[in-house]
Image (cartoon, rainbow, N blue to C red):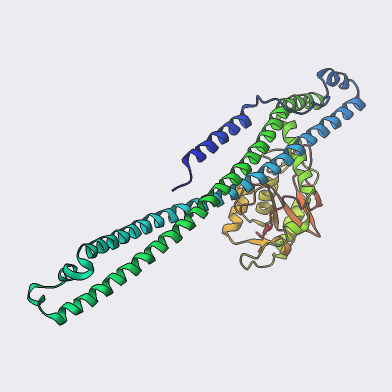
Length: 404
């Protein structure tokens, strides 16, 4: 007996519906909509530097709050989804147990019924033949039937055979009953686990719906905000979107603590950083402080995060750390066995930021550790290359040491 196809089909339909809700963008929010800046306010603010700065600050605060709330709802949704996955796994395990017990019970009951039928045949035969009589002669050959001693021995053998058959039949019936009892208990457990899994799914689906509603409600508003910011700052809506997302990522990073990333075990032995290489790398990186962040920038005037690390190591030390990609640079360091636990970090090491718990999950930001809990980074649009204190939130627990 496998887990009910109807049950899984029902869950699949609900999941599909939730997915459609999450991507359709047509569900109205169930909460009050705050008062947001209008286009007329934007036009008025353009005429006053003071009002323009105030309105830009207001926009950034609204966007940060929206992304923060989305992030909070996302974490709740992920946590509830994980609880559902655990409940589903437990449900599958007990379903497999029920299937195994059902197969064992079917065989045991069949054997018990066969044994019971055999006993009934022997009892009926002995009854018809006067308890032993002709029944005994069935076991005798024609040439030995007149031998009294042989007949007595045959009676004993028949008695022993019947007793053995009886005891085996009783054992088979007891075993069949035991397995059936276990099966009944497992079926009750399956029913309870299915109820728990359904409740866990309902909560996870509800959280996913709430998140989808919030994202849907925010999306059109954010598109307007980005366009309004672009008008105020004479940039583009896409740049303003990227800027807001970068600010939100920094907020998440600032909310972390060292304890969450300092417990990773060593993977292999990595030599200490080469002091001369580190000196060259840090000198080159610090020479770029104050340069503007531009997506795709790899020097020598504009930079993004992986462009800064790639060019710094290549030009300062002649070390190739992979192409213009955070994930690619992490993967090459892993292939070269250059990863060290964050507790063993040294100046010149590369540090990564990620929202994934997987070893090879997506990494979205990279920086150069410069010692004393400081780092050099090209952080985001609207910012410049800078040397700042490390941020612990979403920090990956391993650093890479190309200078080893």
